Length: 106
Image (cartoon, rainbow, N blue to C red; front, side, top):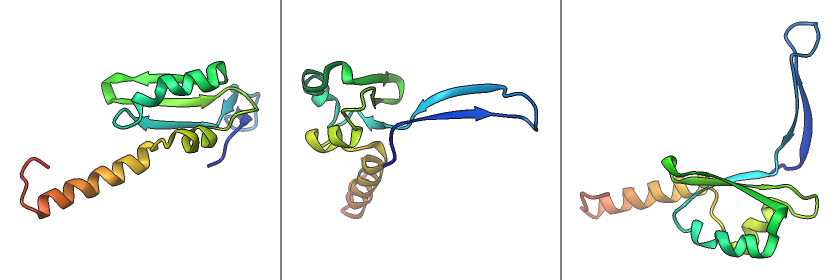
């Protein structure tokens, strides 16, 4: 997982830059399921060194490191968080297994 800030410039052709921004790549997205209950403990441990954004409509949230002293991978490991990509793979496998056992609610 690559992280940290990088300065990006968007150009159209060979002219003057249209947009420039510092982009923080030390960020990960998580499904609420099995992760959200750990959020308060994460805040107690890391405080203002991490920032969260919630997307309740899609049942997910992102965590971003805003400190050079903390990498999101550290937070993931410390709290056994499951990034959304891993969650989607696991949930799909669980649904397929339930269907194979004859459950129609999977």
